[in-house]
Image (cartoon, rainbow, N blue to C red; front, side):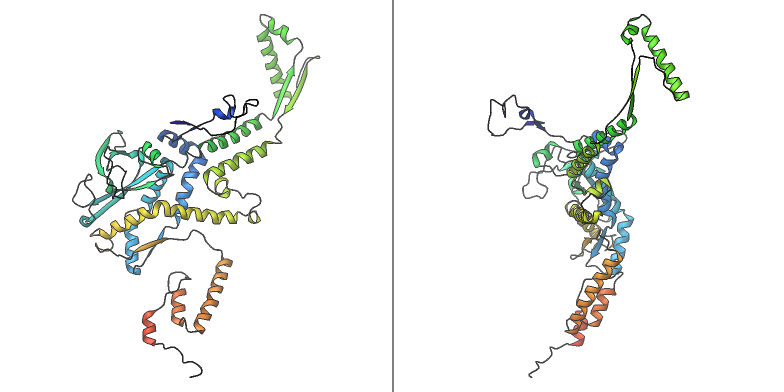
Length: 440
């Protein structure tokens, strides 16, 4: 798919500006959606491409989640159940597929007495057997598209077929409700439709920058090998080559010269010959590579320190500390955009299973948060605890908090907490009444 870019603009016939002879008017904008083979080749052979796919996924899954509004014992059972079904791994792999190919999915393998082609009925789930991560290339969308505008799945395929990996044949019609989809880089609907109802690889938009980065650095490596180049001007060379056996004479002479230079570290040349050693000028290479590197970083939306592994000059004390905070904020946004929904679906499935962690009881208030990716050092942690302690002292002195509330909120859990929850039971038992006014 190729589109010609046209602008309303001023023309200058004398300078050919914006006329047919202007080079700029020949620029075309083309849609570049990576094929499976192209994505595979980049991921397997290019370390930078692999990093752009994996780094966000690995960081986003690293600290995992913390269940909220659930009793501690039940929380432990829930976490053990998720570990048994390898939920974390299923999310990780499906998300990796989404970033690499533009789409990933998790097949919900449950015992509900129905076929894969039937809509999933939450109330019939007896047991969850497994969560199977798949790439978009494992699934072939069938022709039926959901046309009910009241459906949250409007415009998406209703059925998919699963590819049998060894033969490539498509088997098992699957209803869309039995798949948890994770998408890659966003595409507008007409391109989403053109791409077989999947979004795009994160490598598509960065492909040119990745290619230029690899070529530029490989080119410098080749230049280093040819840093010093010898040239030999031979008197009468044209006459020698015009002789019947001139080429063999020349080759023999060069072979002898190479042998002598290799053995005796000496060059032998004729009295009227001239040898020069030319060196490559690298003075501008650093600036060129720096611009290529910056173009790559800009195309990925990732911080310089993450993409290239070093701190850019001019950062906070050159430590990249600001970029690290930006990086964690970016990963947090990616978690919310791409995997909060799928994790929420899985928790809902687990609660509906009769042999699940809640024995089929749905906990309406159950939710979760992503554990913080940013880790404070000892100094930062001590400063935070000091500030919170000073605040607690103020609230205690004016009877806003009790001793037990402060102790339980800060140190009652597995780790120190800044959050404060009032103990209504203790307050009722104490029957605290407001102090009378001084005048009374």
